Length: 134
Image (tube, rainbow, N blue to C red; front, side, top):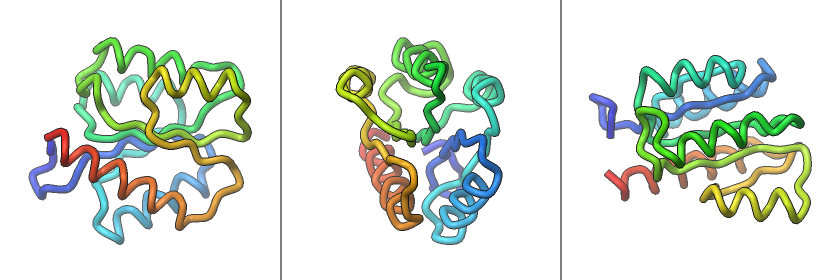
């Protein structure tokens, strides 16, 4: 773990303020992870260049930019391990996207709208996977 307190470092990339804040607050309150919030993929790229994260939860965008960032992660283009556990949120998913997520070793897909319980379970799973990798 990268954290001095033993909690995994989670990068949360979500443009929606209310959703991002709710997820981050719940994860912190439950002691699941130390959460770094990013409002955009550009901000996430800056964070990935300066901090090694143990887990990543990212919202997919219609343009496919999030998938490009995940490709870079898997190629080792950031400080985080290329095997870092990743989960994504999306508005929908077709067969092509499902195959692409599998290729990128995405651990879980949450389709919007989702319940906070689903996000908490996802973060807990990512953190458990991160601890197993450490």
